[in-house]
Image (cartoon, rainbow, N blue to C red; front, side, top):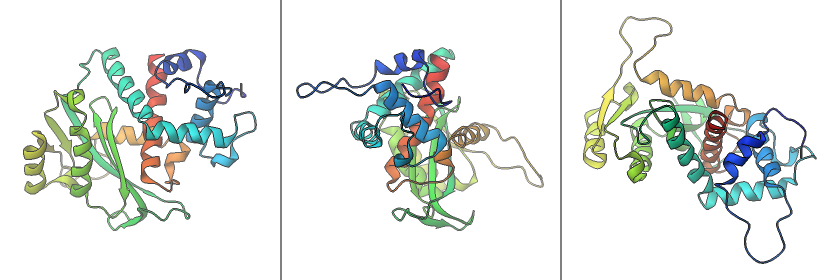
Length: 263
């Protein structure tokens, strides 16, 4: 076992997650690596923001850790764990597993110098990098996220991420209302959401002639979720070559938050 890093899972948290992890493949050599250490290494990467090759020596080899991270991204393991934890967290908060309302917003972040795919310039926020389109429930728990180039318009990215939410099926069977800011306003976008998803869009605008911070109805929830993500150094800037990897780290950040609450 590695040293007691702040990012490590406790034994109770590991036991909680281990039941949802795939079993070792049949045949071949017996699995020798400790999955608890693999998970701790992945969360160390997420919280400390180091490169895979810079993992401390008391973790398993970085190639092994990265292989588990990549394979579980490809086979949907991380997504399955995330969705289960979200439902259980809602039940713990005495809410229905399926939300009735969701909030959508976007966040532009700078990309690292070596990132070249899916990178653009957000003229509004003057940021060259990528944009995260986030949908959360009223507790701030992520439903689905989409990472694109920063120059993708709000309504275009909003349609793509809402399609992903719609594909969740019964997990969002009670969803009726989507809260947005002015960036997603417009009759064309509202009609598309109503025709395609059968949801109603509610736009919350900032009051006129106001200065400084203003707490806006519903919208503050998704802003708080963005704040949670900023606690992970790997997410402060986009270091990933593939947008899919960026999305996986966001789901991992939420997994860590939820498992700490539940375990």
